Amino acid sequence: MMPKSLTNNLFSEAVWALTKRIPRGKVSTYAQLAKALKKPQAYRAVGNALNKNPYAPLVPCHRVVRSDGNVGGFASGSKKKIGLLTKEGIKIINQKVMPLEKFIYHF
DNA sequence: GTCGTGACTAGCC
DNA sequence: CGGCTAGCCACGA
Image (tube, rainbow, N blue to C red; front, side):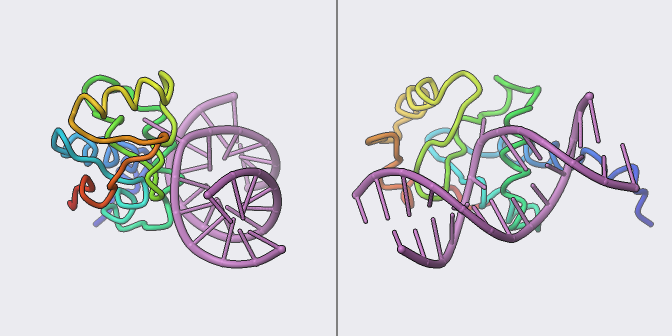
């Protein structure tokens, strides 16, 4: 059985849960999170979930970047996001994570 | 029930 | 290399 009531805002929760799993010093991409949720084409919804994330400091949403390495956006400003990532030991050049593959965390 | 929005991605010029 | 377009999903009004 599958109560549809469980399928309403679970997606967002799942996104936050996965984001919380990202260890310090590593990053992930929106597409990667979507893939982990069995919805590789929902990367758009993933971004929405993070944007509305009510667990701001609890969920390290700043560890989620774009597939092209760009830090993407941030509710408090991409600049702040870059600062946090840099503090974690991640190298960011020209607003991009380099080398991205070395910091990507596989679920 | 329908429409618009967004922290995205890949492709094309 | 840089900029633009179209397509995709979930959520709120």
